[in-house]
Image 1: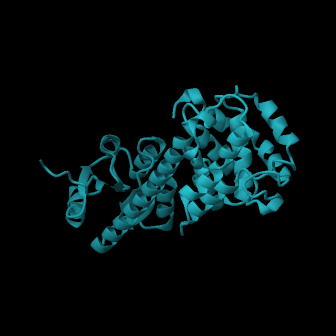
Image 2: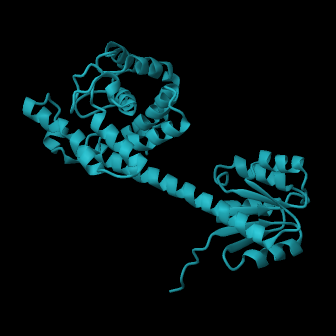
Image 3: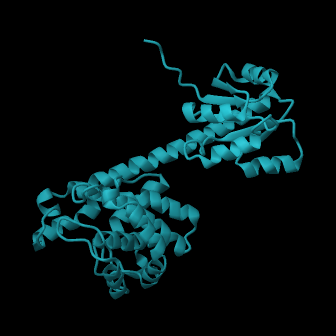
Length: 333
């Protein structure tokens, strides 16, 4: 069986055959190369072949490089492909126009082989890093959904509540990086449910005192599953799993923490989790109307929930409801 070529795929676009040949000589040993001599052909190859990177001339007859790049960036199928302009235009205004069109880098002609190789390696490594980041998030969401799937038809709860958590974190001023980390960690908040027997987890009636004690153990199970790691993401996920059922007045579990002794990430997830649970169908209840769920959040300010975070969450309700509609249970995963 012929071995599949796993080298990254690069599309080189230039109307001059000599320039194509020069770049071929520089890159052919390390990459699979595709070639186009005009913008329309470049667009077609980008759609059909999905290259990992595009090297694009600016001055071409017909569709220019800038116009080609703009078209690539407006197509969802090709907008994530990084574009490096390779051109004789070297003024600052030319570079600015290239970046404005969606390019990620700018190499001037005549090219330096060492510079081309270095820039290509750099941007391909960034693509790989982004792919790994997206894969990590997908794995995290799958793990979270594995737990939720047992008492939720599609597991979309973890998708919605993680988006709600990010929205609330941004509103609370935690910053974009922290909000993104919370978005990644939140899907694992109930991973400990994997260890709860179905007879308890899916029981439509009120749980007995003994059954409720068993149900409460899922937070400790979640912390044990996530374990102790150096990874900030897993540390955050463990904290959320352990503390998101604490209550602001100290009546929650497992440690009866109160107020700001509860980590803010867990306080945020508590609101996002409960709001989505209330407004979704569960084995033991119908979905609540949004206004009824909001009324409950208000009634539990200072008891179950952080009062300031409730007010911020309600203020962000339009964004929350947009996510709720986008990831509705009947809309598919």
